[in-house]
Amino acid sequence: DRLLKEMQATVNSIVAMSALDCDAMPLPEFTHKYQAQVSLIGIQFKWTLDSEDALYNAKTEKGIMNTTNKKHMARLNDLVVMNMQSDQELRQHGKWTRRKLETMITVDVHQRDVFDEVVKKRIRDPEDFEWQ
Image 1 (spheres, rainbow, N blue to C red):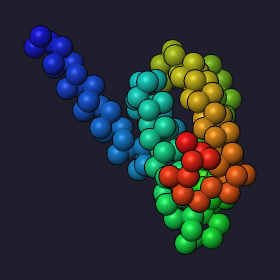
Image 2 (cartoon, rainbow, N blue to C red; image 1 turned 60 degrees about the vertical axis):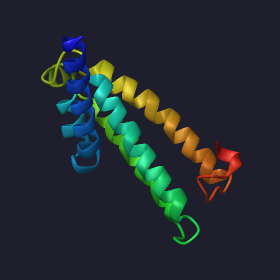
Image 3 (tube, rainbow, N blue to C red; image 1 turned 45 degrees about the vertical axis):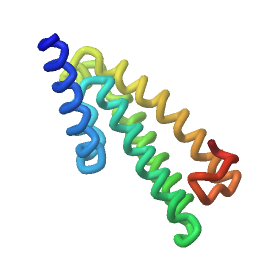
């Protein structure tokens, strides 16, 4: 029981740190610092934070939805560029780095598609039924 509690506390601590780092660190540094699952959670934190911020401010800040969409696209493009590195370069960060990046790209493509729909439907409120 004690071992389980310690493991849970450790995972909780790592994920909490990643939640802060995902907004503060450059994407390559963040991605290489954490294990695959934590890196994946980090880009989902970032997408959620940026998307919710855009939705809450869409009624007062003209263009924020398109600006946020461009920010999402830039992150996706950065992941693709990172994945285009040679196997030798990526293995410096661990033998599963390419798989981690491919998974992050797959999830980010889905997130991009969701936000594209939000923009196309002109949703301006996180409580809007159309997007839930």
